[in-house]
Every structure is written in C-alpha cells, then in structure tokens.
Length: 248
Image 1 (tube, rainbow, N blue to C red):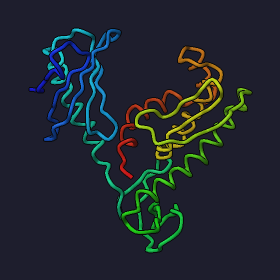
Image 2: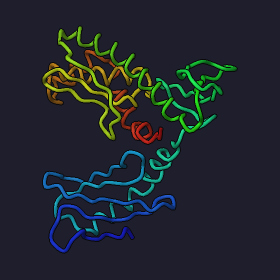
Image 3: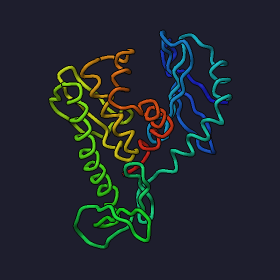
C-alpha cells in the first residue's frame, strides 16, 4: 500500500516510501532510531513530505499498520496545511493571531500597512502583485522584531540575565534558539501567532539563559515568565505547521 523500498541493498537506517493522502502522493522517509521506543509521524514544513521515526528493526508490516491507523489524522492535518499558499489580493494573512485581508493599494512604493476597512482587518500592500509575498513577509519581520524585542527585554530583566543579540530567521521547523553566550534567534513567522504565543516564545528562549535544558526548573521558569505557557505550547502544536506552510 505504501510502496516501501530500500535506498540500497546494504543495511541502512532510512527507508524511502510513498503514501497517497487526499489524492496526493507524498514522499515518506522512514528513519530508524536506536533510541526510539515508539513511532513518531511528522509532516514536513509546507506539507510536501512526511517523516516517520521508528524503533530500529521494526518490520515494515508494523509501519504499514501504523500509517493506516493514522490516515484520517494525516488527511485532516494536510488539509489544514495546504489551505495556505501564495499570497494574492483578497487572500488572508494572520498578524498577531488576527486574520487580515490583503488589499493591493495600486501604489508602486510604500510599506505594508495594517488598517480596518468596513470593520474587516486589512493589510494594505503596495507594489506589483508578484511582489505581494515579499511585502507581506517584510511586514511580518517588522512585527516580529517589534514584539519579540520588547518581550525579550522584559523577561530578561525579570531574570536579571543579559541578552547579547537577537536574530530573526526563516527557519523550517524551529521557532527559536538560545546559546550559552546569550544569543537568541527566532523565526519571524511567529508574528502570525496570537500575542500570548509570541510572549511564550520570548519567555521560552529567555528561560534558557537561566536553564540550558528542558528540565522541571526550566519549565517552572517559563511559567513564572509566561503564565499561559501550557496554552501557548498547545496552540503551537496544533497550528505551527500552518504558519510554516505559508508561501511568501
């Protein structure tokens, strides 16, 4: 059913497969991990491929049964991801958790501007339509920088920890990172999430300035900085793939 095939005659830790979901054939990488105790299925950013991590030596039959059981889940999640696509006139983009209708201004120059037209949150975008994606992403980068810079300063002050630098990137799967030198990095795509999720991400990375792990003390620090930590984690788990899937 899923078309498994070894990548080479010799023993490897990865197998290639194909799976059909909602009429689409998607590549599936089955990766064996000696430390894995259960199977973990992941939709790659953009919904164009799947990755399944399995315990080493698990028979293909068990993998096939696992995928069959989770076929409905895959259909639902992939449908959400593929709702996103290239941005054009009248499509919507979330900004701080609020959907904004994209409207072309007809002007050649100018920054994207958030406004409200007839009670509808709107993002007015200048330039040619083929440049809409870049204009919108530039706006989201400004929003991310403004909101996260402020939240990081606040949380770092609470802990009395210095922040050396903050960088913004378009990562494929990670929302943020923190080094022992105090360098923080964030995915600017978080600007599409609600404010409490943005605040959580800032709190999460700042908490690493105190606890460079994910142990109980780290999560206690997160809760101290952001009381909605659990809610924000749940939101990202349910909606994060949709943000990574937006094509700019």
